[in-house]
Structure formats: structure tokens, C-alpha cells
Image (cartoon, rainbow, N blue to C red; front, side):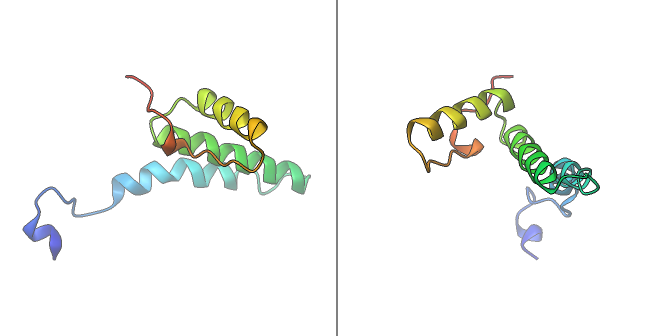
Length: 88
């Protein structure tokens, strides 16, 4: 009912679902892998890369910065949303 009062609210969630589809499909593509460790690693990286894209951050720059921060300060978690978006 809220969308009736706020015309900016979309009637469906298709755009959100489309945006998240890449993350889910990428993980699913690795289910049949022979190595469980390889499957988990590939799924993790695919999720990180797609999440960076969704946040408007260059994936390579995000992975580099997150790795550098983790090496400098073990236990540090850097989320893509915490970095500046890439310029269009």
C-alpha cells in the first residue's frame, strides 16, 4: 500500500532481482566442480566481484584494496560498499 502514497516506489522488484541474478548464477555454476575447496573459493570470488559491481566499485580495485587492508591488519573485512564508487 505504501507505493500508492509514494509514486517513486516501484510496483515490483524486477530490477533488484535482475541485479542479484548474476551473483546467484555465478555461484551455481560452480556446484558441479570436482573440488569442494575450489568450488567454495570460486563462489566466494564470484560473489565478491559481483557485489563490487552492484556497489559501483571497480572489482579489481576492490579486491586489491580489501587484500591490502587484510594484510596490514589481519581480521579486517572491507566491504565493497565502503569504497568510493567508480567514475562513469
